[in-house]
Each structure stands twice: as C-alpha cells, then as structure tokens.
Image (tube, helix red, strand yellow):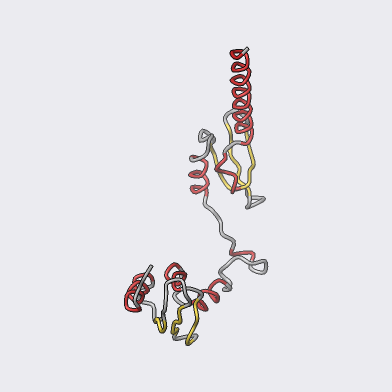
Length: 161
C-alpha cells in the first residue's frame, strides 16, 4: 500500500482511537515506523503494517501487557483461561457427532471435557479435540468410508476384467 504520512496517521488513528501514541517518522508501509509514546518516549516498530494490526499502539506497551500477571504463567496458576460449559456445548454442536449431550468440563482435570455419546456412552476428550466429537463414532465413520472406497475399487476392477 502506498500511504503518505498523513494517510498513515489517519489509518493509525482509526486503528487506535484515543491513543496518546503519535506517529513521528513514516517512510513506507512495510518499513519500520517511529512512534512517540508518552510512557516510553520514541519507539521503533518493526513495520508500519504491524502497528495498524497490533492491539497496542506502542510495541513496548504491548510487550509489558503480555508479561503482566493477568496472562497465564507457571507461577500464576489461578489465571488460566477457562471455557464455560456453554462454549463447550457450542463446540460439540459444530462437531461431526452433534447428537452427543451433557457436555461439561472435567472437574478433576480442566484440560478435558466430559460428554455422553448416545452410541458409546460417557467420553472424556481434550477440550481442543471437542470439535471432532466422539472418537469412537469418528473411527466407525472412517472405517465405513474405507470400506466403501475398497468396494468401489474392487467393483471397478471387476468391470475392467
């Protein structure tokens, strides 16, 4: 993109409304840009494009925010991000086996979710794998697909003979 410094300043104000950080020096969109932060003074950002996409207008303010104690860290066990049961239920609804029900977080292990599959009974899966639904249903479905492919391949060979 080609921006003049005035055009870039306008985009910066749209991306970071009300920010006290100002653009000092700008040359090109993919080149470093120099900003003035009231806390850190003059700060060099890696590229002008990244500044428009960043959450914080000042890169140093962003670094400090990411190192703050509100982010999960080994010494800060109590602030881990937790998904609510309603979010887990929505994830299961998007899965290939949406008929599973009673989705909730495992109280003994917060990285896992518990749910009940109508065909295979209670299941325990990692929360990230919840969009896949019941593992046993998925295995059955994949096995059926493989068998159908093999049947198609064998029927094609019979036709050719």
